[in-house]
Length: 286
Image (cartoon, rainbow, N blue to C red):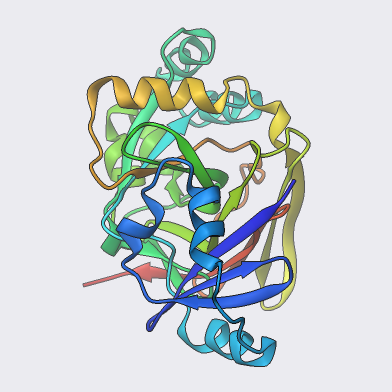
């Protein structure tokens, strides 16, 4: 397995390949939205001189942006058994629990719109919780980058921020529970491989409050009930994405029901081979 990592910064695209860093002046959308992206990037790097590692590290420390251009972010729900159970628990009082049980075994997956680019935060940036929500959690998710042709071209780390109290009150409130200012995190890079991501890839999440760990767990992506291509095929049945899109693939890491995020908490999500996405938590207020 050969890995290329594409970082979006304020001044350039920074490419990490085979232990070296390269800068490429290109628009994000045109650069990443190419079928067979891995081979295209290898061609782009031919003849380029690598930059010094300290210079690359300085760029990453001071100029990193979320790895997104004008793409939409979508998400899949109830793709892991633990997510099914959590959704059923939170919606039991409202009588909506059976919806999640049914969609877990149904042919058609749950897919929903998550975020426009300006509502996406990158590594080291803040994501929000809603002021009108009493129960909020991060949801760590392997996130696919899909070309306009419907091909899976890369992967990144996703943080699907969610109000469990709002969704639990009524499943029809899902858009309000999921879509609001800075409701999603992506980063730190777009990872491009010469093969599909391995099934034994591990997702890890830790949550800190006052630098003390409140939660920590991990899961292999092999526990997903549905395949990545299955989710992509359903998403592209009814939508066109001229610049490609991102698709969060669901979560299996769910803190206990007694836990809710608070201001100044820190969420660290890492996925093998891709890297770590760190987000700070604040309540959104006008």
